[in-house]
Length: 341
Image 1: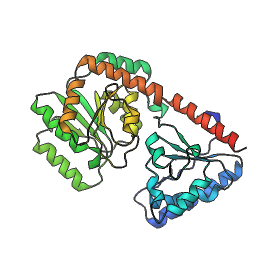
Image 2: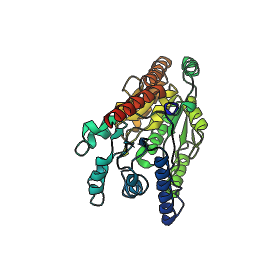
Image 3: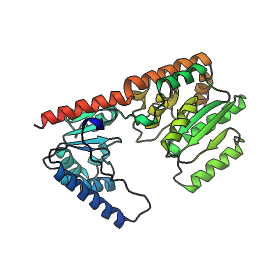
Image 4: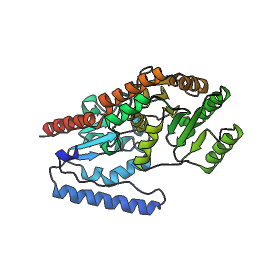
């Protein structure tokens, strides 16, 4: 998409280990950088890539972006549940005011859009899904060759998400004990960062107690896109047993589809919109280790696996491929520019 327009990128991300004073200082500097860029490009649209639903993030958004938006075409992207911002005493007035300044709000799925419908008119919103970066994708021939070879032995399972209990990493661990009891050959790669040392210690102790050291490896947080790409391609199944209250549309599921990897997940948040049960995914109830174990056993069948792997890649190409998402963004930008003339 960027090749069609001149693009100026302004990074408002901040390290987590700096002081509040330093964060505010950096946010003010980012806002000043935006102001200078808008002065150089007076007719430019602002594409705001991640509007925040949190109180502190909302304050940051006003400091860095909202104060420079008057009279501008502004498209904000919402990747998370945004509805609570309208219910909080501290933010409901400023959030309502914010919406009046935006040309469009882009949601990743219908669930996020529907939650905000009492405050954001449908005419003001649009739905465009996430898509992986083009440089992180395997080409079609590589994926098809991989699918033709079938699943491996031991069967490789990937969990890739933050190590948050509600994302279901312990549910998968319980499913692993059932697989071992049945003498199923498998390996689980856990990829994700911990939020507490205690949770990490408890997980590692559980792996030892359950005698799963040979089957399970935790790789920590992985940020290099090339490594994330390889984890997905090496997996026979991507498993995300989430019961996370604010689950939206996990990018990790889209990345799995892009590698032709069948998905085992739950009907949580926007996930049922992303994948179809029995086609490219197996949807299970939250906190149901036996169902996950059964789904893994089902996918070990060569015919079932190849059918679902092919469907996974088809789903990616038809819904989440960068070319598909790019065309949606081009249509949106052109429509907004016409409306604002």
